[in-house]
Length: 398
Image 1: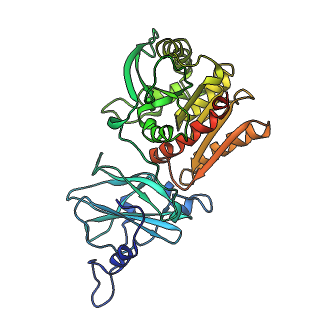
Image 2: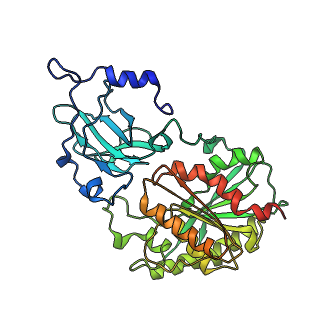
Image 3: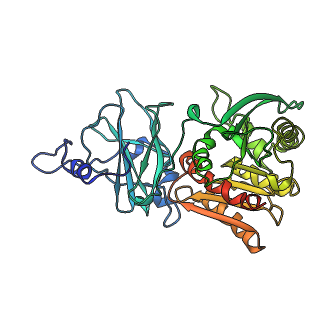
């Protein structure tokens, strides 16, 4: 998917082969909103000015799409997604920068949705269509004309650094054996004691794809990344049940029914993961050399770990942190904190801003970034290198 929409492309959208009403211009594409459900996402039931909510509006005309293809059409203060569905589809939604149900357009094989996005030309998002329980095609990226430039990303299989994955037995029944994924930068050896970032959700390989090019160019510090496998949110083949969300139980302090899992995971991190990584990789075993990070519930976990163990972690990376109940607290006064959120995920953005304001109020070092985007791995990967550089700035001067 090309970044943005060209002038020629806009002309084609306006004049191309669309359905025509007799004698007039293109027939309006009016979705059947009753087929999509989930009206809590409609703009008319959201707070005034809410972003990323669904507008009940006709869709812009589009050129003929191949079956299974979708198109993004930006407009003033809004963005639309139009999808041509295979026969027999009964339900479809758009993911991931936008997370909204698609509605069918009667008399056609098209589905679509329009979302409110005030600064649509600054929008960057991952997008794909989820239909009847599975993705219709690979996720792709779309960027508005004024969106931040894309960071170079190296496919995980082409990283110059090394990724090692191994199981680590916790000795705890609630945790069992978890996979750790450890990224070490190009040219690293155990004789080079580097700072380390401990990441929720096993995220080390994915975050290394955007970090490594900046390490190579000298714009990000050399660092070891440790991804810690999370528990599943739902068991394979079973419907999601919040009461059985083991990932949330382990990551969110105060999650209903999750106290034992949270404490067990905390002990696994402190008593097993840190000692093993410091023994095996020779990373810095000081608070100043340890960062804890994550996204979504993993971001909330990072906040909690740094607050509960201020003499263990002096860096926090909280990307789109969730804002569920819990005494997350604040890190050590000398800690450096990076946090971010997107305009299309208002609850997470507010949580990020609130956390940053609390740290700033007591004179802590914090950087808070707001992006025009959603709850999206693309944004997290693009913000991660700058986050690492910020939280380890004091280490780089040592």
